[in-house]
Length: 170
Image (cartoon, rainbow, N blue to C red; front, side, top):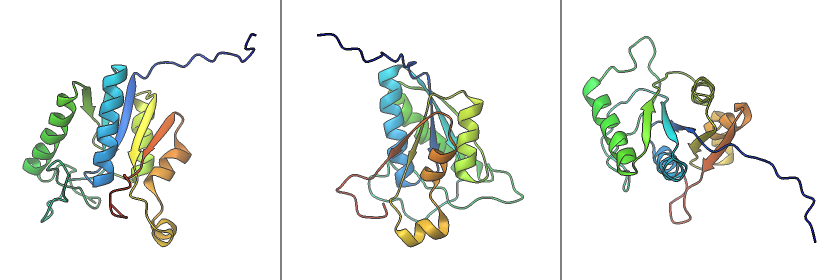
């Protein structure tokens, strides 16, 4: 018996863009991107989508990373250079532990559009983004970065969801 199903050649993953803002969903996306990059010997481009700002506490299991919040207006994205270097150092350490080539593409603006722009600039094969599973009201009022990326992207998009053990909104 022969299978007449046409074989489709798929290009190997060479470049993976990960949307990153320091939140728990972004950390999950970064970890998944690192796993995929290691498996495919791909390069990870970390699309930093906002400026780092200090927070009082780091959520449990956050790899000690300080989340980013808000978007700067009229100021340099790297306003707090010490915090920026510390944060990037931790991201680099995570990717280095996985043995992954990487680079940073710091951008400021609307996250979904900026992540897609970075992917297009780097001719990415895959975009990886996290989601915090917002409720219906939040989704209607604020929108979803992961959905925005999926709608705009010209390459494949992987949306990394929270595990079943994580509390809703994590």
